[in-house]
Length: 262
Image (cartoon, helix red, strand yellow):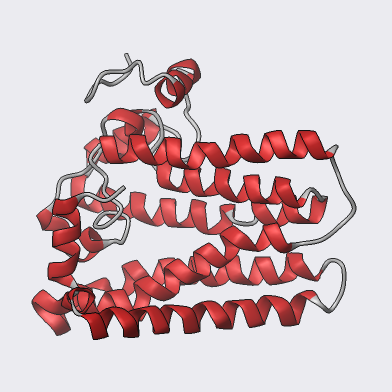
């Protein structure tokens, strides 16, 4: 699901993505990063039955480090590159960050081990967790958070070009995108159906919680007491209150657009 306006903003910030050769080179660059991750997992995982936990932990920490660099270096990118800051930020930081995170996301699916649950139960749970990814994504878009801009951190580089999203699903949890990613990797781990895969999936919480914490710090700097109050009233990945309202929002969509729970 693409938002045309948001996609246009992304193409304006990264003009390479509007040219055939730019697209090709971006795909090749992304594939090279993904290949490095695959080689890393393959090399480490063959060292022993618990090695996948080590490789997943290392990749999770690398992802968290890249998240830290996003916020640490962004001012330098703005000062050095001006209106083209996001173009360089995208290739230097954003793509490596995304590849590392999705390496953590998919890795549990490929971890072998003795079956933990009956196959039918693992399938049902895996499908349920994975369905939460598109369901949550719909609510994220409906709230005004677009994957092509917000999700790719365009507004981390140019915060003055957007407003803070707090309606709809954001009235319950502050980081629904990371909630969706956590549900997705748990779903894949459940298909793998062994305890090592499940623990590896939980390690994805390291970058999720760290990135959420970094984003909250940045938003407190931008919005002060209003965001501090928002933090007190909402959970990072799970709702602090009105859990039933959150579930109803996800599965029945009973809250009208822009509404917030009492």
